[in-house]
Length: 452
Image (cartoon, rainbow, N blue to C red; front, side, top):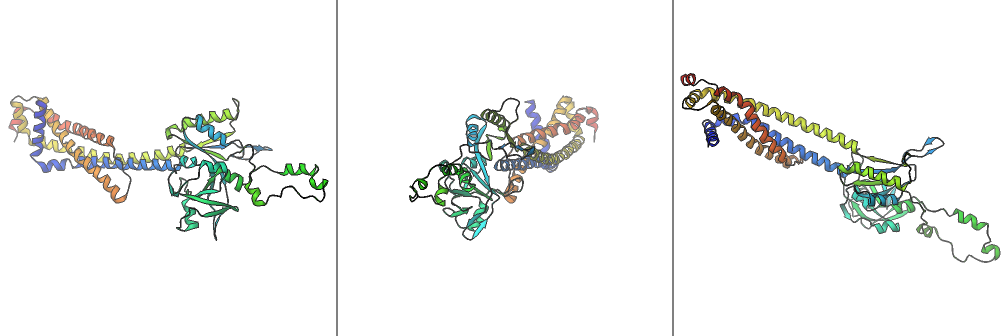
């Protein structure tokens, strides 16, 4: 009952002068509203940046062949030919921290469609899982090529949005045929617009085809027939035995030779692109990948790896630290408003103690103790701050969504910020209301009753 009566008395004291009470809490309202708005806008921006990182490959790991040395001269990273599609399959099966992986073969060529041509920034040969690794599952139109297309080296492709706009100028590209190094590809899908990456490179300027097609049909990596041709010249042929005889089988045309591929026994790839299950699993995925590849490549303990692994952890840490610093700076500005509001609370409570000196003396004369007076004025200060905090939370929440509606900035509600705002409001009331309450509790009853 004492706590209830104290709270009721505090509300009655605040209602005596509602305008002054409202103006007193104005600093708290602004401070709390600023904290809530800044936290929600900051959280929304952080989430948007995190999604942007994911779309650019925040949890992506690139496994590349190591360098080779020829006559003491290093050929650079990727010059070794030690990575194979089998390595990619092993990574998927034996690495629990890996969500998806895809072999990648890179190429460089000009695309021709009718009387138009375009040289894309990227030509990638891969598998359908490449889109999962790059968070590119949604297509603008059409569909992705399949694993069967990869196995059969089918001449199908996916176009990035930039290439589709340049070559087809708004027309549908599905079913159309383009040429890459005189190899005709049928367009089966157009990738959804992705924009620039963190380096400013256009990610939509890409041609994606099955890696077997790029390697064996476009790049021309197939078994050489020179050995069989040279050996046949040293043995008896039909022409030497029967000079007038013709060949039993007609010779293949160039088109038939191009369509009849003799795959190499060991098919190397330029890179294996891996997606960890989350950003937190990147380190664990790297350890698992190293273990699998060292075992498959039979690398002894103490020997260097014949592959290299890269991730984007350093870039992500730098950008995350930058966004966190900006959010903390904005929060500090909002905390200054709370401090100013707290000073206003202390000022008005000191005025209230001076105005109500006779009331304090009367209460103490009829039996109120110093602790009762201290609790009463402290309750009034905390109540003022909590009312201001409630108004500030509503105003800040509404302001953040107004910013989202008008400026289309991302926002995200933060329950933690609301709880923190309530605790801060209570703390401000206790800290800045304690001195006026303590001063009121130390008044002499007789002197207080004589006060005019």
